[in-house]
Structures are given as C-alpha cells and as structure tokens.
Image 1: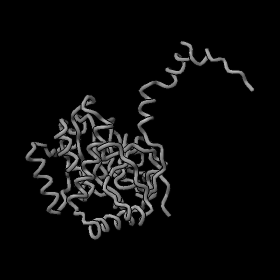
Image 2: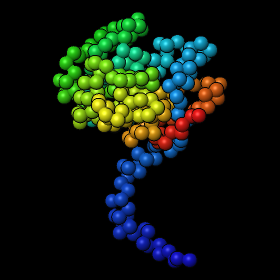
Image 3: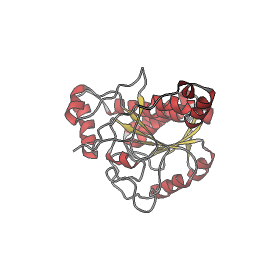
Image 4: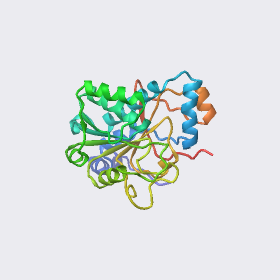
Length: 272
C-alpha cells in the first residue's frame, strides 16, 4: 500500500499545478456537458419519424420548424454569447433546413443579435415566404453579396442542407461551402455540416472535404455522420413522445430546466 501524504494534495503547490492543468473555466464547461451515448438515426428513419409526428402525433410542419429553429437559436446563444459579437450570418438552403435557419434568425433578432440572412435559392413552400416576411418585419436584412457578408460577421449559422442531402453540391452551394470552409469565422451547423454525406461524413475531396464547424446541433437525434465530427455537439428537439422514441429506439435526453438544447458528447452509436 502506497502511503498518502495529505499536505501534498492540499497545499499551495498542488493547487498551483492543478489549476494550470485543469482551469476552473474548463472544469465548469465540462460539468455542463452530458457524457452520454445517443443513438444515431438514419436519414430514412429521420424522414419517417417526421412523417409520424405529423400524421400520428398531431404536429404541423410549422410547429416542428419553429421548435427546431428555436433550438438552433439557443445553441447559438450557448456557443456565441452577445459579448462575443452580435453580427450573425445565417446561410439558408432551399429546404426545411433553410426554414430552420429562418426561424433561428428571427429568435436571434429578439435576443439582441444583429442577424442577416443569405438565401440564394429560396424555397417554394408558402411557409418559407411567411418566415421571410416575419424577418422583414423585424428589419432583418437579406444580403446578396455573400463574400462581403462573410468577412463582416462574427458568427455563421450553416442551415444549408440537413439529413436529406444526397450530394454532390450544386451551384451556388459548392462555392459557398468553400468560402465558409476557408474563413476563420466560427460556425454552427444545423443537423449536419453542409456537404457532408449523412452516413459517411465529409467528402473525400472538393468543397467541404476539410469543413469542420465549431459546433453542431443534431435535431431530434444525431445522424450517423456525427462520428466524424470533432467539436461542440448539441441535441435539440424537445418534443418527442415516448411512443416515438420507443418505435425508433431513440434516447430522450433529460433537458435541463426550460432549455430546448443540451450539450452532449459526439460518441453517438449507430442504429442498426
């Protein structure tokens, strides 16, 4: 048995070494991250789950998009507080992922950020036009010069493509992803980093091959590509019922308080 010398573990020397190795800020942040392994869900099952929510669960697309966008905005708040810079550029794609981004931009404006939206290919669904009107009523600008907007922003939300993306990137999104990839601005990607294959992760070459956003928010459940991700990972989508989680074999995290998001590890298990 090795004798323990108590004073070595309680004296100023130990505290000095410990504080250098484990800063208090890092320990506090670590304590807020839930270390749990969540089930990943395939793109096919994610689409089926959304359909079940609307056909059997009584949810509308508007409601689901509102809660998804709210989750995205809360993740931005946790990753990039107002003190880090108010300018947030939200890049939206033509589908539901882009709709989540439009909702998030509205919430960010209400939080006190100064969001702007780049929406190069607008979705045709009437819902997207209503979301755009809501932003215009808040004087949120829709920018047309992406390169200039990227240079002047403090943070970027990548809401271009989500779990339904099948690749390859088509114009203008290849150039957009390349510019985001080479910029130094921190990024939060929604559901999956745009350009990534939902199963196999980043492309081997071309736009997105080296794209690793600062943070990722998985909506409802992680997607298989999360195993290739290195960064801060959040889960969002606090609306699943037990019958849905049981049907798809999903874990339902215990969200703290009134939060719509929770930071979790990135060791998602694949769903067979």
